[in-house]
Image 1: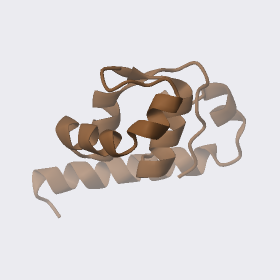
Image 2: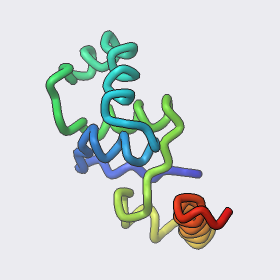
Image 3: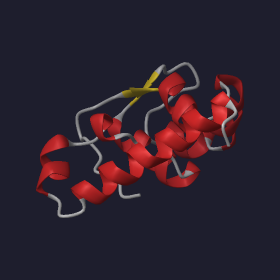
Length: 104
């Protein structure tokens, strides 16, 4: 999935952990392995909300797909891929909900 990163949006580590479908502790362990890179970006281990450039790095490194509401709406709406992105996101979410309910 293509992410249209919002250059003004800070996203919390907890939300990114949920999007990655891992526990916050597991996500913190992953971030600890990237401490040198994140420190160079101005992110400390105690930072709760990651700045946009760190969000982009983490999402690309950990393969996290941002939901449409967390992306740059102007760029997303202008993209010809918009309908495909939203449809695939909705299908993925429906699949995950069905797995949690034990349907699949």
